[in-house]
Length: 223
Image (cartoon, rainbow, N blue to C red; front, top):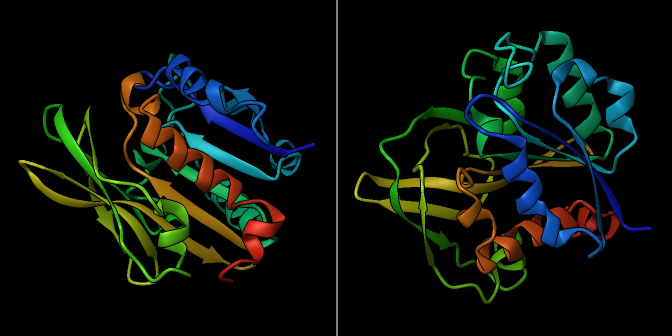
């Protein structure tokens, strides 16, 4: 049946349509997506229907409602979801607005701080041991350049497997990492403001590999 993935997206800066267009080429390739664009639709029961969840919205209920939605109760539900063996991909907007939410920050291993004006950003895959997690995600990939917001992160990544960095005239930042949390995993990817980033062939491959890593087989590797 493939990996079932729930996608939480849409806020005033990050329209759901970009997320949907960016994931569309991966649908049917062992991945099935279901979208929710309003945080009031979220529940722990909704999330439990999926093998993994993509969080691609900032801490806003919706594009029209800027009320923060990630309460302590919701954060605890995300933590429990992952620790029970599920996957969570925190993608671009999913790192925004959670700086003062310590439980979620701890779960994800870092949060968005700021970004300069958009411009060329070079994405640099990590080079690890052949059997390492980084090599499994980025093996055979070369660095590539996208036009994007260069996210500057407050990353607590001492325990993270960093598989990608981003570089621009403003410096170098961690841009992709994976964390073990209980029986599950959390992945973070910071690029993705523009559809051109999502649809870049190298980023499509990266997304596919990260998401398939949430499968039962992927979870059991490098545990």
